[in-house]
Amino acid sequence: MPRHPLRILLVEDHPFQLLATQCLLRSFGFDQLTPVENAEHAIRTMAQSEFSYDLMLCDQCLPDLPGLELVEIASRGRFITSAILLSGLPAADLLKLTTQAEQRNLPLLGCLSKPLNRDELESLIPSQLKTSGGRTYNPMNREK
Image (cartoon, rainbow, N blue to C red):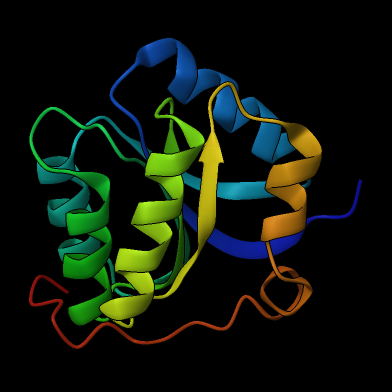
């Protein structure tokens, strides 16, 4: 399996889902994964990172902040290039989230239902992201 340079931030509060999603991403050849359990930890991790993340996979129903709000914070802070929301919500709710992201001009690639479907996840990750892994310096990082 070819390795991809993509840096991925994975935000999921359920330990089993976090582990299962990491395993799925590794099976695609992604090994630069940063798993975190909540929005607060995600924001701290992004702010301390020297480079932005190419992709954030984020649970919509986090205990401390809705996933779409975290995507907005991360996008406005230039901490991420793109995002995918994960959720157990009904399809109609996922469609509403996608519409809200478009209205806010957020870099949301889409919403996926849990449990994740391998083919659906792989189809949402654009090929240019898989090959470029373009790093953007994070000017907000004050720790380095």
